[in-house]
Length: 121
Ligand SMILES: [Zn+2]
Image (cartoon, rainbow, N blue to C red; front, side, top):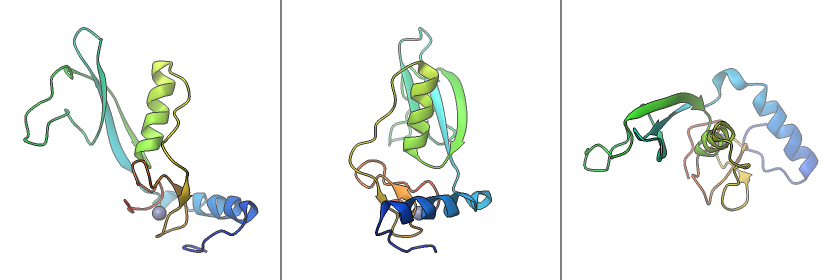
């Protein structure tokens, strides 16, 4: 069923469910959360970290590694972050859409990362 564009919400739901049942192969992306020594700053970055600028320089206020998670997408990492920090539910920007590669739902206007495959749009 992969790659078919769902025409109705019923088919969409079933497609997502079938995809999820193949979860052993689901995409895993590593995210790590970091905080400053004084606890006033918390940063979430993709990868093992520590957070660095594009030029390789270490970012300030990221001295302590809080946790490491493997999830499907940035949106999933942010949802977990909000839960762990006691924030409200995380709401990604824009509408969800079907991944052009596998048909799973992703957020093209936000991270563009598909939780189920390596597509990043
Ligand atoms: Zn996909």
